[in-house]
Every structure is written in C-alpha cells, then in structure tokens.
Length: 478
Ligand code: UDP
Image (tube, rainbow, N blue to C red; front, side, top):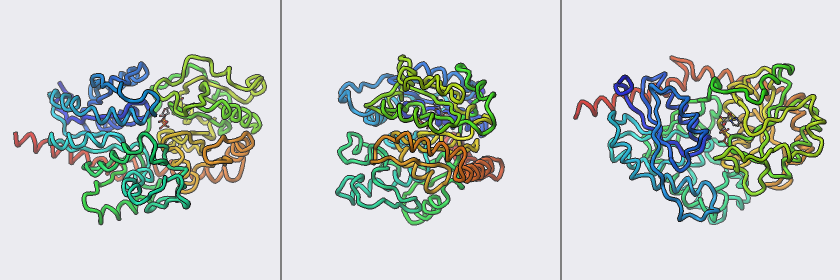
C-alpha cells in the first residue's frame, strides 16, 4: 500500500468545521507537496454529516480520518460555553490518543495538534514523536497566547477593565474589551483552562502559523527577537496562507449565477463564518443598513440568536426559515440589488468572483485569508472567539478593513454605521486605498507560497525535511 510507505503525519483538530478545515487543508498540502500520508483524528462527540461529507472529499489515497471514541462530558454544566467543552475534550482524550498512536501500522513521523490541543504534546513526546502546533490564526493572536500566562500573573484586574490598551511586542495596541472572549474576565468558565493550555505551548517542537511574512512583519520581527532570548521558546514557522481552493463548492442557491449578472467589483458579500449568528436587533440593523447603503449585496442569513453569537457553530443554523426574521418588505425593496442565501454560501467561489468587491465579515481568520488571496477588502464585524482582535489588527495595522463603531464595547452596530461603511468600502476613497493594500497582500501571499524561494513554501519544506529525517533515523535505530 503506497500510503504506508510514505512518512506519516497524525493531526488532531479541535472539533468544529472552522478548526477541521484548516488542519485538513494542511494535511492535504503535506501529502500533495511534501509526500506524506496523513491521518486526521476527529472526535466522535462532534462528528456531523457536514464534516463527514467534507472528510470524504479529501484525497483518499493519502489523507484518511479516524474518529476517536465518544468522550463523556456529562459532568460539565450543560449551559457552559463551547470553549469549556472543547478544552475538556482535548484534556480527556489522552488515553484514546495513545491507543490510536499504537494502532497505526505506519508509525507517526510527526504529530500536529491545533490551538486547543497543547496538552496532548506531552504524549507525543513520551512516544518519541515530534509534536507541533498548527496555529490557524495570526501572529498577533499567537503573541497573545504566548504572553497570556504571564499577563495573567501580573494583572490583578480583569483584562477588560485595564485602563490602557495592552501593547504586546510588535503588536498593535489592543483594548481589553477587544481581547478574545474567554480571556477578558478571569471569571470566564474557560479562562483557567486557556491559561493552562497556553502555558503548554512551550511543549511544542515548533508552531506552524497560517499566515505569511508580509501580513504582520513587525510582529514577526518581535517573535524572532524573543526566540533568541527566551530559552525553550518553540520556533515559529509561517507556512500560509493555506486556504481552500473552492473546487469542491456547489452553487445550490444559484448565488454564483446571480453574481455572473452583476458588474465587476460591485457586490458586497456579507457573511459571518461557519458558526456566526446575529442578534435579532443586529439582524434588523444589518438589513436596514445594507438597504440604506444602496450597494449591491449578497448576504448569507441565519436565524437570529440573542444568546450566543456562535449559535450555528456545530449545526450551521436550525431549520427555521431565516428570511422570516428580516424586516417587513426588505426582500421586495432590495430585490434589484440584493440577494439573500440561507445558511451557507460557496464562500471561496464568491470571493473569487469578479463581481465581488467587498466582504462584510466576522473576521474569522480563514475568511480573512480567503478574502486576502482574492484581493477583496473587508468591513469588520467581529462576533466571538478572537474576531475582535482580528478586527483591530486588520483595521489598524494591516490596513485591509474598515471597522464600524459601536456605541458601547459590545453593542449593536447601527444601520447608519453599516450603511456608511458599506458605501465607503464600495465607493469611497478609503475603500480604494483598502483595495490597493489588499491587492498588494494578495501578491505577497502568492509569492510566499511559490516554490522554491517563497518564504512560506521554504519554511514548510524545511519542517517536512526534518520530520522525514527524524523518522528514518528512528527506523534505522529499530
Ligand atoms: N464558509 C463557507 N460558507 C459559508 C460560511 C463559511 O464556505 O456560508 C467557510 C469559509 O469559507 C471558511 C470557513 O467556513 O473557510 C469559516 O472559517 P473562519 O475561520 O472564517 O470562521 P469560523 O467559522 O471559524 O468562525
């Protein structure tokens, strides 16, 4: 069997399509460009039809998947946030992970977990397998993760109550209210778990980041300086941008056909990731703001949820018709310029389409990279996880997004702000500047990935070489 002769990488993504997709893309890249076979370990607790369909679409001769047996989480409070469930799952999977490792006929040349999985690295080490973290976000977020345990020790107050913005080495200044959800308050149910997880990042043999040199050059410089002076700091490798090609996407809603009939760069794509839902009030404001902007739009709508902003994370929305929640007459009034798509759109194909000129986005990192590689500037509408931090980064440091104001830190963005941002991005001078900057980064991203000299290509090639050499040395010893 061909895949058995190839060096074997085992990958453990955190549940949720937003985590599984990037690690699967990474597995495919290792297989197709660097000659590995890969096994993705998933958690049967969260296996879903959408995930199963996605996994079967991967090249079966080189990338396979194994679902770890069910892990009981019944002792957790049922209303605890999703991060608590994810952290607990990763902490409890060690015996199952050990069994999985021992069952492979082709021993692992390397193990890769993602941002939640650092507590599994000690097992890899014990089994003599180099353990790496694939960090599916940006360098600013990684810097925050690496500094958080110390920040926690040295501040008595909650981060969101700090009077001044936090300025980490090389990073844009970030207000405490823009920190990722679980880090803002020490009383958050997942806060202590995150501190523990992040203090284990030092167990990694290296951290692979889905970004590229030109995205955050100052942060990279600071990270390199820290690597020189801090003993035991895992080396960071920028290996991105890794984004889906979109070749697997289908146009069930006909939105691509609709885009075919729109002028170039005229449509604002509005979508909030795989799990994002707006509140009832925000959905109304979004609709009325888009309408008032007079811009063409393509909007992926989900039923509103007033309790959780990531309500659709594992389900991609419920079965109710989301258009019932739009303002009275909205669809009729906007039918010449707008199109709504329930639940899901073929996002990469939409962003690649010549008619798409802007992206009103929740700033998830995959969405951000997909927008960047297609040269589409953004309006930042962060909802949860590290999206507020991404919004600050994109609007204030990278220069590819407008961020509309909210009246209070976690408040609703009003229709006027939405309309003004949409007009500015699609028609204004600032929009033009953001467009140019996004195109610069689009070119830089493509250069970074081009063999043999592109920085991201070279970085991954070097790591892959190290894994292969290590594996053949281990085989020679046995
Ligand atoms: N996505 C999509 N269609 C949708 C919504 C999301 O194809 O209607 C894809 C999107 O292209 C991206 C991923 O889902 O690859 C979302 O990842 P991201 O990191 O942006 O956000 P998350 O879902 O983790 O919040």
